[in-house]
Length: 105
Image (cartoon, rainbow, N blue to C red):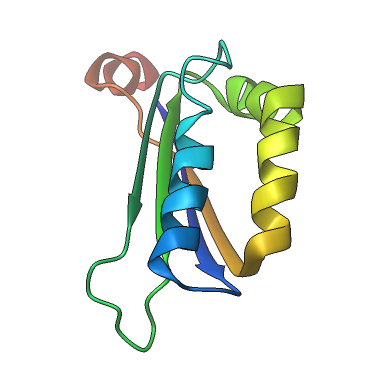
């Protein structure tokens, strides 16, 4: 399973704008075939190092992640979010199933 984590710090950090961006990101669900699951939430601590929004998505393969990133619906949402963002951080990693690990031995 491939995990895609994205953190967004927005230029305008009002509750209204944050909620609008969260809803925009949530609209990805059900619109891109390779997207297995998605969780989008806003930061509740508001610390000095906090980002405003976190997105966690899951894919079967890195190829599925690339297909998601290239999908026109994702491109539209990403373009809108990136214009509103002051900073974006991304981490992509794979966790193999227990069977895949056993098969490698």
